[in-house]
Length: 182
Image (tube, rainbow, N blue to C red; front, side):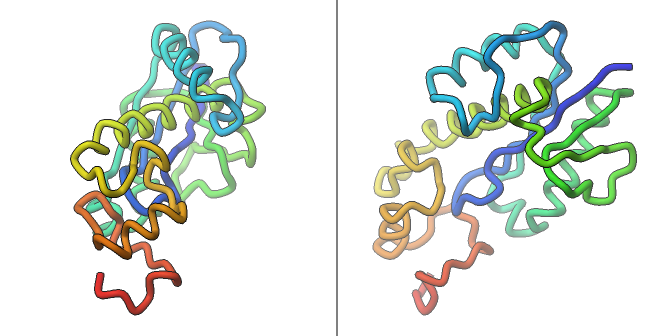
């Protein structure tokens, strides 16, 4: 039976997509780890190696889908999409919630200990980060190329100054922005 690791990137940012990846490795890959523990250069190098040596599927949900459906519904939909695309396998998702999906096991910190989940973590993060860098020139006042949509002080200040743009998650409420006209 094939084994598929699943992880996501972009659960908490104020802007950009939620990206979920599922990976079935065809051979061991050295240097895999939780994407957050790797440098950008290392993630980029491993991304190419993972793509070349795996079967994978990446699901993404933009800010409007997250606002409309909610984060949990998007996560559940992405998990089902990956399982449908990759077929019969043993699935392991990083975390402690299966979102009610049958035949999906979960494990906290699997992205740091299970190679397939580490690989999924890297695919999800690199895909999402690349997208934010590509979108940055369309919204130069926000600095997306640097903070990738997360709630940095510079990003929050840009929202205060310019309001939200179309890739912001309007359903994500920040106490520091309450009372704003956005």
